[in-house]
Length: 348
Image 1 (cartoon, rainbow, N blue to C red):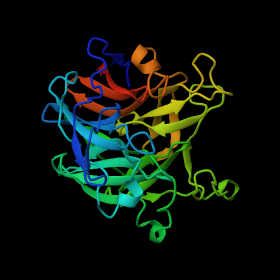
Image 2 (cartoon, one colour; image 1 turned 135 degrees about the vertical axis):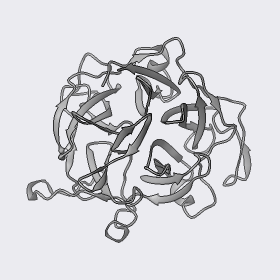
Image 3 (cartoon, one colour; image 1 turned 30 degrees about the vertical axis):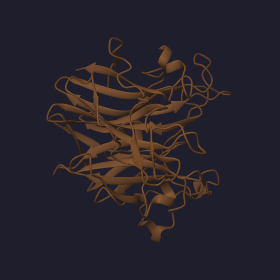
Image 4 (cartoon, helix red, strand yellow; image 1 turned 90 degrees about the vertical axis):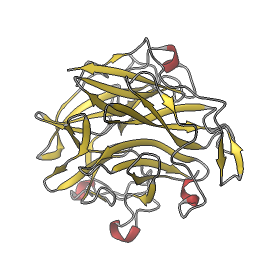
């Protein structure tokens, strides 16, 4: 998919706001909820209006900022109006101990055929990151369902480190609708390797475990049994340190197009990019067997080369999470240096 062209005339399309306030019920005080940074947005097109659900940080607390999810809308995909308060945030609910005080991070969004929205996001309590999911019919009022793996093997994975869920979709007009493959929904997830999980309801997911006895070693780094790997980092290339899902994958006539994030290994990476650079790549997966990679980019299609992408909270970062079609144009939204939000477009 592409080429994607950065919209320099409008970028960055979203920046932090030191004036926006929110009554945090956990702190029991008013906070400037997006004064530090905004980044890593999900995106969806509703009747021609593009909606961004973005990660925003305040600048207080022991983690130097709690993350919440804000909402912004745009008719042209370039100029946005923000809601004054976050729409998803840590609260005094049953998930408080898992979401506080790191917060809720890095959303990705899809919808089903009936117009219910499913938001996968990372909950971080300072000890572990956990892949959570929430649902809504209006993007403002969300029902939290907790861990996507809550019912797998009696909740045995509830304390496992997990992040980044990209649900496979199909384009229906200007909507990206969750699409079943071989009778089930598929989600690509992980942040070191890319793994897969399946579901019948888009809320409860079953990770696919490795069945090859030679690959069944326990992953002590991420505290989980060995899962079957879709693909992983490549030594010497731009994606040599880690790979992590980008926006929802899209089923096309050629296969499943999956845009992903990566990090360049400081010690064994591609010398053409600064050590630690986050850039974006693409793979094409076989819909008959999503573990079969049909094609993969040898170089990144989106790299940090603008000042606001090179310098920020984390330097040299383009981190993609939002992808929406609108007519003959695809809008790709991404975080820049973990500080701002930008967009690149591709015209079919």
